[in-house]
Length: 277
Image 1 (tube, rainbow, N blue to C red):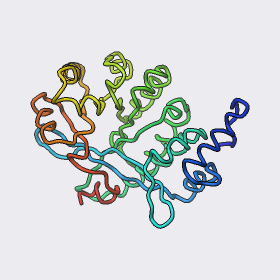
Image 2 (cartoon, rainbow, N blue to C red; image 1 turned 180 degrees about the horizontal axis):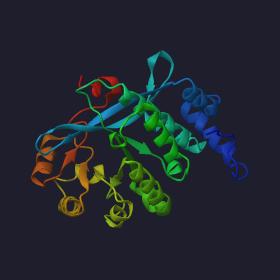
Image 3 (cartoon, rainbow, N blue to C red; image 1 turned 180 degrees about the vertical axis):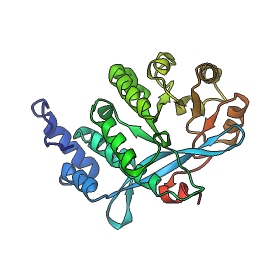
Image 4 (tube, one colour; image 1 turned 135 degrees about the vertical axis):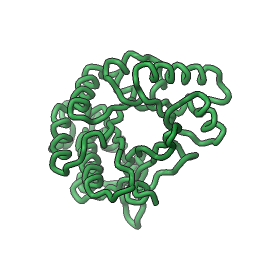
């Protein structure tokens, strides 16, 4: 998908202002050209953070894919430093294609015994791209990778803001055999309607709930409700941002199915972490 610059339809002066802010934040003289170069020359690097099953048999069952941008002297920029610039230039669908393609490529050559299931974060721009599902299907066929190896994560805020697009996106992914998750669930409100509408496979409980689990009865009640609903409709519940052993123990007591966070495993390059090293 080609991306033009500056963005079409921008208000007078708006695009120039945002370009200037992007340059100030990144230090790049031409942020658009820098991102185009990063995509064209594969100057991005995939990391992943595994997700632990809290039920027997316990173990890592999946990993969330994260992306870093390589800069000079082996510096790796975290997503917060460059994703807003991708968003500003309307390039998130291209980035999501790059990530998906490279994850599928990795899965096609993954050695036995390593992780063989990954979740990929999808932007609000991409869920409105009608060509993206076809791209995913083509990549999976070309590499002979089973669709169930991919889970696509959609932010709760994106779902609520663009329910129709999110529903169409989820239906297309489910039809080809991929899985769907809602990320940051419960951040804005605990509404279970989207779970049924999108027929998701997982919800990832927002970190604001998980971090407050031991000191907030409201947080615990929210999580309990999520677990009950998940068990009723067959949706897996993943607790994000698990950083303390006491919280992990409480998650087990509450019968939460999965956990992810720095207290379990830190992100690492996909080749290391997915291979179990």
